[in-house]
Image (tube, rainbow, N blue to C red; front, side, top):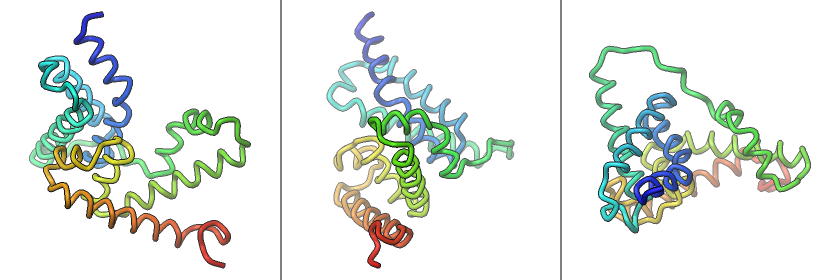
Length: 189
């Protein structure tokens, strides 16, 4: 396998799922268009100069994916309305990956796996309630694993703004999750 193929193959394995989720959110839940955007992102990676992405591959991928998703979104707003798949709610998103959730339990009991899925569902629901910019930086940080500087470059927001949005977003998530936690699990009795 040549260097370019190895780079793209490794990037696909590491970032494809996260990029699809990211693009899907940017495109209002349109999974098929998100997959097309990510496919285009990896095609652009194939065509890119390897030196241009060396040392900041994740940042480069998220930037290209974001720009492409925003272009598609603008185009869709100008184009006549066409039917698109219905937006998934958080519970459907969890059901899409049950084997991942169960395999990540490390041999825990079925009750623990169910509890983990319920927690994931609650986090996704709380995340969806955040303003768009807070959602995006939280997703880039925790789903994409990007640093503040990388998020700043992807979103074109100042690094201080990224930190502020992450801070208030995480505070809002904690507060919302604490309000909805069962008695004895994070809430004062």
